[in-house]
Image 1 (cartoon, rainbow, N blue to C red):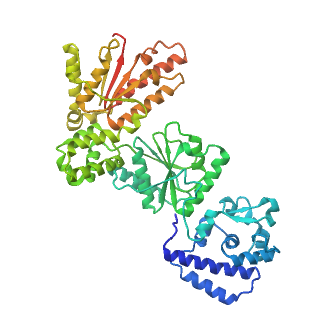
Image 2: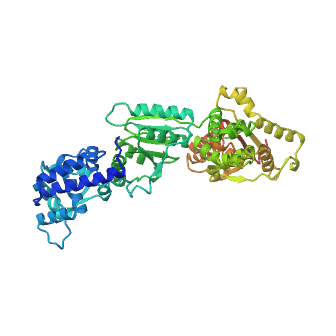
Image 3: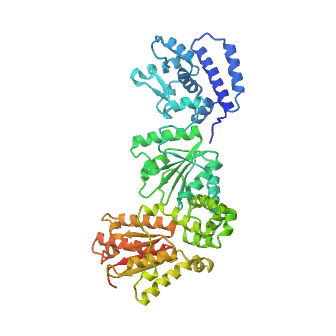
Length: 542
């Protein structure tokens, strides 16, 4: 991919070269200029360029012929050079009161190597929206207009088209990356550098959205191009608008030296994403848990969050000498929270300041991890502030003993699963699931609060009666959002009113019964796979 040079020296030299090119065009239109002097000046300004001129870069990028190049220069010159505008007006017999213009007919008559196909709909000038024709006067006599974005580019001013700015966000390369993500980035880079007529689409799936962004940004940095991100739901869905967006983005990708990363959330419009992917040849990243397929060649990589060991390494990189003051707290943090490298970098910046000022870094570390991992869950569930303690519980000794066993299991999870190696036996059953049964007012929620307070965890209440939907598949989608968000924080999940879901499980008589049973099975499967503490409450008796 080609990127433009934009130093001050290049800008000055590029503009001087444009002026010389405009003088050459004036001679072609019949202006009285010293042809030898103009040729000498054109050669000198070209030699003085510290890099390729913008018009030549653009011509290479879009495959312009010599005539198409001069036609674009002619239309640009009418806007930028007053004398060239007057020469065009005189050639067309315009009065001084009329605004100078260039037409295709004038170019066909005056410029060298002219050809009719230059303004065909699929020829570069019109396909890439470099020029527009005023159809009211016909193709030959209609006024030609240069796109403002292209005009500025020729003058040496390169920026993202304002029509795309509300949708696209620039993404910078990460300061720190998880090592396994760095390896994925290298693998992507190798595939993109393989000889091919077009680049494949890079599909980045997995549970680490930030990590997917890091991989794409790191690859873009290695390619020396700018990465822009866009949400899939912001892409135009109507075919006409989608085609216009695809053309505009491909033009911008060429002019800026840029690549695009599409973030696909749950329910993202897969058709809009595939439409954009199938209409381009530039590098394209599509990221999300479940990325849509497309007809264009693809390569897929799974980007999951760093495991406990990798998170500890990231914390050491971010905190530096301050890690010596944590007294082993990192082990607990890495076991409890599932944070991306970007989140760790953000959280670590504040902790470094805390350490330098002599603050309690050990306590602050746990609190900041809880804070940064709340955002997604706060939108999906009700966070409860635990106020009850063990002394507030009025329960028989057997139930109290069970609750303390649950707390002990949670506290020693790191020892059992990581240090003793039981986590390597499988991905399920690494958390704790509990069922609290009893009539309303018997203390089920209070017992959950006591556990959350003891374990110093956030407690989120999910009302299952509000999660269950009559629409097939919607209940599972709602539950997936909750569990996916909770995995980051390892928060305690309190599923209240489980009767709303379990009461629907029955013998299968029709399709609705079958889907109701699927919903229950999905909840139980996610609870088993959840590595935190999940509690169901019911008013039913065993």
